[in-house]
Each structure stands twice: as structure tokens, then as C-alpha cells.
Amino acid sequence: MDQETEMLAPDAAGYARAAALLAQGELVAFPTETVYGLGGDARNDHAVASIFAAKGRPHFNPLIVHLPSLDEAEKIAVFDTQARELAARFWPGPLTLVLPLRPEAGISHLVSAGLETVAIRLPAHPVARALLAAFGGPVAAPSANPSGKISPTSAAHVAEGLSGRIAAVLDGGACGVGLESTILSLAPTLLLRPGGLPAEEIEAVLGHSLETGGNAAKPNAPGQLTSHYAPGASVRLEAMAPAPDEVWIGFGPDSAGSDLNLSESGDLVEAAANLFAHLRRADRIATERGATGIAVAPIPERELGRAINDRLRRAAAPRG
Image 1 (cartoon, rainbow, N blue to C red):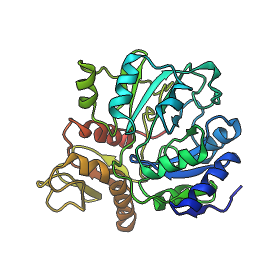
Image 2: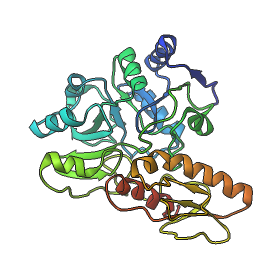
Image 3: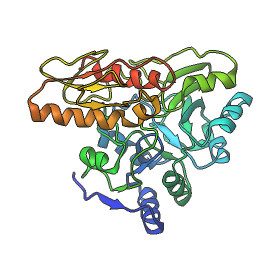
Image 4: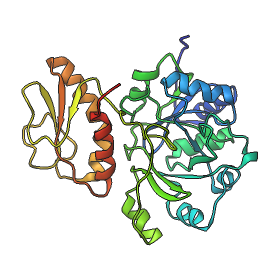
């Protein structure tokens, strides 16, 4: 059933209204440094179930719990020395840790999809931090978009996909990182999802390279489904030039004539910030032209390029 979606400003009144809605079991979208999240009280089964319903998200796909401080995080998950070291180095920021869930934490079983672990992070965005402080509790929040579609990096993107399905959107402007958080499991140590924190920075702290893990059939963290982040048009990767029926997203100075360029200078940070917005724009251009596909230039498989390519491969995957 449709409901009116309020647009809230990032001020005292907006934070108070958003916190009150969360306390009532309603859903509020809010900005993080990565993408906009769709927040609900992580302790409230009905609120968490509503997140899955609003997104059309499979219930076997776990959610990330957002918290304001390490003290609050330790009430929910069991931290060892390594987890504390990573938290001290990278929190608040775009790193999610998958840790053993404390049975007494009071987190809805829907958040962890029945697993004995929980994904948690401390967002760095000042609007997210202000909302978490105002609410005073754990907030479960996947990306604020219909499941499988392009993640939102602005309040307008959220409204395009979820207006009428959620109570409010807290508008904090464009997201700076533009890719979802990097997800790291510490039981055992595995990179479950490349993201806004380059794996190389984590490896420098750990002193060893990271192995990758994850299971699309039975995810143990978000972002592992094979087909994800998908625009309406088909996506072709490693394209040095477009076909006649394709919109071309370039990268770097060698993509002359591209319709859009993730970064003309070849800056992977800029490319990451532009990725989802450019996929949305390319999809609109394709519709306007009657084109059937989106071609994307090669992206280096290093630093944030690993996360960009992960999202692009999922966007290009066959759709069920």
C-alpha cells in the first residue's frame, strides 16, 4: 500500500522527525559516504521485514547494521584484537566487518538471515552519524533502491525507486564515495565484497593478501547476488568502442567520443563516485535513442577499480 514519502532536510527538525519515524517502525532513507541506505530499526522484526518488502529483496540476503560508535558495535558483535585494529584504522568509513553475533544483542533474526554472524559498520557521513545519534539504536540499512537495480547516490535516485514505499528520505546531497562499503569477514578472514575501501589498504594493515569468498546461492553478506546493480539496458564490458545500438561509457583520455566518461583523467576515485549515476544516465540515454545496450570501457583491476569491475560484472550478468 502506497504511503506519502516525506523529504526531510538535514537539520535538527529533520533528524528528530527521521528518528521518530524509525522508532515507530517506519523506514527512512539516509545518505552515507558510500550510497543512500534504507534504514529500519534493526531490533524490530516488522521494520526489518518492511525493508525486504519495500526493496523486493530476497530474505536470504543479509543486511548491514549501522551504528554510531565502537562501544555500540561491541554490544552487538564479538570483536577480537584484529577486528579492533581494523575498526581503529578504518572506522568511521566504508568498511563493513562480518563478526560473530552476540545472542543477547536483540537484533532481528531477519537482519542476519539466520546466520550466527552480523555485518556492521560505522558510517562516516555527518548526516548518517547525526541520524544514528538522534535515534540511539542500531539501524539495518541496505542500499535504498529496488533489489537488483542501480544503487542510489542522491535523494532523487531514492525517490525514483522507492517513493510511495517508504516513510521518508533524509536528503544529504550526493554521496562522496559512490560505491557500497567493502565487506570483510574475520571468521575466517575473507574479502566478501570489494567496495569503497580498497583491499590494498586492508592488506597493508593485516600484513597479508586477502582471499575472496562469498556465495551467490547462500549469501553471508550483502552484494553477492550474481545479477545486481542492473540498468534496464543490457551491459557489455571491456568495450573499446560502442556498437551502433549502444550507449558508451568511457574511462580515461582514450575514450574520445564516449557519451559519458567515468573519469577523463583516469582517476579511479572519481570513477567510483560517478559509476551509479552514469549507469542511470546511460540507461535514460538508451531509452531516448531506442538503443538496447550500454558499453563500458575497460577499468583497471586495481584499488577501487576492483570494486567498480565487481559492480559492472554483476550489472552485465544474465538476469533471471
